[in-house]
Image: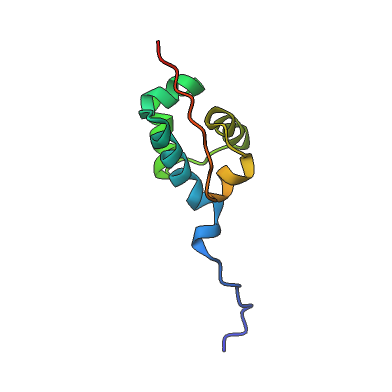
Length: 93
């Protein structure tokens, strides 16, 4: 034994930093949106959406709040990746 304090095991699927990118991608797909469409709705550029979804970019709290609003989901559900009940109101022009 090394004497170093042991670390509690962490369940990877419970870590918002890993679940959030996949949840964003899943919700975007459920809405039928491309990354460009989500970028247009949020005011961000397409590269930002791509980096967020791939986990190559940290997502700030204010961005998570905006995404929850855009997708019409509860902030806690977005963060945890829990089953999301979404109603999609598609706008046709």
